[in-house]
Image (tube, rainbow over all chains, first blue to last red; front, top):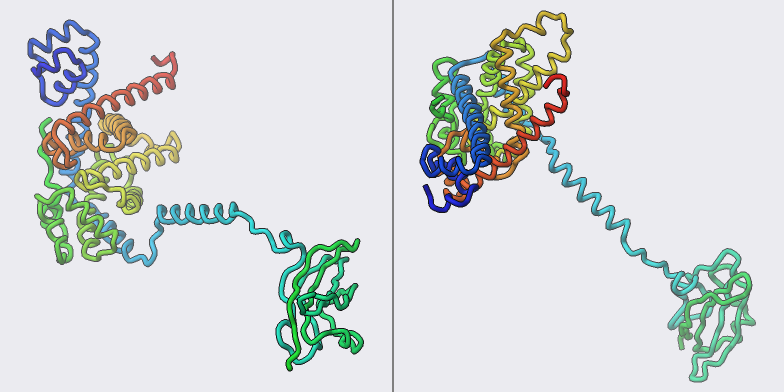
Amino acid sequence: MDPRTDDDPEALLQALLTGGADEQSPAVQRLFAAHAELRERWARLRELTRELDAAGADARAAIAAAAATTTPHDDQVRDLILRWQQQPSRFRPRLVIAAAVLLAALLCVWWLRPSRPDRDSILGPASGSLSPKGEVSDYALFQWNVSRPPEGSYVLRFFADDPAGRFLFAVTDLRDTQWRPDAARRSQMTPRMAWQVEVLDVDGRAMGGAGPVAVWLQR
Amino acid sequence: MNIPKPCWRSWRDLTSTTSAPGPTLPGPFRRMVQAPQCSAQDDLALVRAFLANDAAAAEALAERLRCVPRILAAQNARLGRPLAEQDLADVVQDSTVVLLQKLGDYSGLGALEGWVFRICCFELMNAVRQRRRRLPLDDPDAVRADDAGAREWSRQLAREALERAIDRIGGVEAETLRLRHFEGLTFEEVAAAQQTTVPAAKGRYYRALQRLEEIMTAQEQKEELRRGPANR
């Protein structure tokens, strides 16, 4: 018997169960006499190995016996296997589960994404471009792409595009996003000027705007 | 009981005198049907090739799985034929579908037929249970199994409980138990199959046995509680 098993019951049991020790040896018998609990555990585990041996031998015998026979269903399996492989798309539960998990993860990411604030919440209702800007042939039409609250209005302000930035005039109470100057207003405009849009709420408070942008007439 | 290990891979040889020969198999799979010496790793290669839609592998696997109806018929006979031929045909079909669905789980540590045998037994037992539930108690078919069949039923129940307990152990420890007792391998062969050392294989085996003993004891205690004190 391995000297290591003398004082280690677990090592002794393992050795007995794996062929490293003999139950009948005097050393093992002495240990069993000294430790009744060890003897009981050995008896239970040995019984279990006998059951496993019997089940294994039974299975091997059954398989060997089955090999020597034929049944009316022999070709049934073959047909099924060949049909199975010829299926164009086989249901694969693992693949479907993996796809579902991936989809759920993507939905979670989309749902929990940091919401991007709209431009109006930062800048007020102002956003978008002003037209005209830069060189133009005529001051015919002024347009802007700026939102306003339902009861709000636009104010256009015009300035001379010079170092002093002199204020020219303002056009108030506009609801549309374009304005066409009449002759009187045109006469107030300078060849180079800047203009801006401001949004007012129903109480006349400024909510933001766009511009100013420079615009000038062709020479 | 000293029963030699069966020749797992020799289905074609064993059946060539009793059934029509199958088609000639191309490539390496011919060896997997005919050569008795090929290993469980070859079985795994065959299964993987089949799952990769290899047509030759399908032919080879079809030959190998001819064991399914034979195992089922033999086990049904041992149980006193509780299932008629038509019912058995249904179990053959169901078992084959289950096997095909589970093929990806086959680990290649033991012979394919051993793995097939376990699944077939499980499916057959379930089919017999379902049939017993369907039949009225006064139906003569319900008690057709003779004493030997009843004894075999009890033995199969015990075997099923053992298999379930091994399944609960799971992992490499469960494989070690199966290789040792169901495949009949020595510890040296178990170590080689698991690509480990002999002491490591013995350690796994011992841990598995201890765990199995715990599970079986707990099952027995639960069963006794279920029966109640009057039946003890």
